Amino acid sequence: MTQDTGWKRDKEGLGVWEHQGKVAITGWGMSPVDRRWDGMSMDKTLGAYAILAAQRALEDAGVKLDEVDGLFVCPDNLAGANGGSAANWGPTRPYFAPPYDSEEGLTIVTKRWMLDNLSPPNITYAPEYVPAIGEGLGMAAQAVGDGKCKVALYVYVMNNLEGRYRRGGESASAYSRGDNQWNNPWGANNIDLQASGTIPLRQYCQKYGTTWEEMMGPAIVNEHRNGLMQSWGFYALHGASGLNYEDYVNSRPIAWPARIWDYDRPVNAAGAFVITTSERSHDMRQKPVYILNHNEGRGGEARSSHMTMEDWEDGKARVARMVYEGSGLRPEDVDIFNPYDGFSVFLPFALEAFGWHGVKKGDAADFLKGDISVEGAHPFCSGGGNLGNGRTRTAMYIDSIEQLRGTAGRRQVTVKAETAVCAYDPGLTAWYLCLSNSQP
Amino acid sequence: MPKLIPVPDELSKPFWDAVNEKRLIVQNCRGCNTLQHPPREACRDCGSENLEWKETSGRGHISAFVVMMDSHLEYRTPDQPFNLALITLDDDPRVNFFSNLPGVPVREVQIGAAVEATFEEVAPDQLINEWKLVD
Image (cartoon, rainbow over all chains, first blue to last red):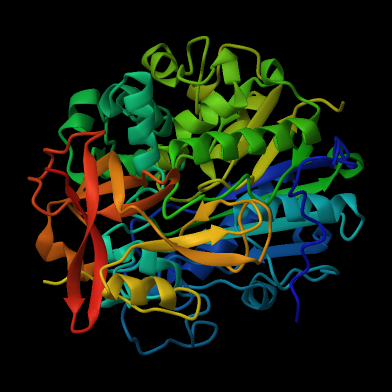
């Protein structure tokens, strides 16, 4: 079966999204966020959490399960059986009684498992291939806009198991194959290098006369502060990190100067979102948050063995052009900006490419050293992102929805919050969502 | 512990064969006269499949570096901490290579320093390209 990619908005020149403002997000839900699944607690499996997150999203939207006609479940995981060749670790276990008689429901959640166990009775559209949240929410939005379904439920899971993260498979091999033959012999692992962003940011610091610490320190401390103001984040639930600048600077180096806090913490959790037509959204519990645009694809790639600062600047600039073109927004129109921060290096490049609050090339360090708190004039990453909440990849979306609803509580920004740009966009991907609390 | 061993494929075999002869070659596009590395089926810039292998000067400069202290790669962890530098090729600085800068103490890396290609055995009959400071 061939994966359908025709729905993707993955290049420049596509114009404003044809369904702009006709599709809305009306609900979100999160499971508890655990560090790992312990392999025993059946109320804490990824399947149990996916069902819980879905139920909470439906409750938030005021939608009954039988009203859902579109189901989107991303089966990708980072750990365990389908997490890629570097992720092959975890116990060989005796299984449990159905529905937990395979990895499905334990460390993997598929469409089939959700159909069998959440049991929505009226699903008419449930694609087989559903991408990760950065593209997946766009896929669901496009499907609703195209009339393939009217009330879509998107479910995203992130798993984590016992043992060190992604140390199996090719990471444990003495050989380097494929693209890795150009990197791994020298110890240049893509994850260690923050999706090929660490060295480009070192080049950036050299060019613009700043240091890693003075740029990333304030950004990461701000992420943790905002994460502690979430109701569901890992640190908010499991003991506050209360990270300060000294903690950050003195923390364990991974690929110095990148430290442990520059990398998001793997967790075991699930999130879900309800997406519907603007007509239906008006009858639901929450104030709708309208989707102005979604983007997929990539802004570029490495020109040579490894990405450079120029690759990042050019690639992110292309991404920003796609996002702005499709949404009709200009940089000065964006109130809430929640770019992806799974690796800290993504932040300054995104900030400058999108020109949020007037930030231009080389300005990021000065901007991040300023007041970027939610109480101030430049509330950057108001949701705390992955760094402040754990690797759920949902914080950027949840915060944007809440800010536009006006329900972000202690995180509610004091500046205008009518539009948002948010993403799970690792590397130079263009996986963005643009939101507004009013129809254009 | 030795560095990881590259496994050549059809596209990369000429490169690794040259490395085993202590030569550093990269692809050159006959269409637009642009160097590229790693090798591709077609030119990254103009799309031409009219590519040739070209010997480089083997000269470069250190563009940036980090210090690996907790690598995912099991076979490199005994070497930690180690320098990991990005080297730009003088023939075309848009072409880059990784290096562990043999002989350079950890973290004592001078950005912009001139380097030249050298070669290091990682397995019987398999060298990899490395870079050392120019005296």
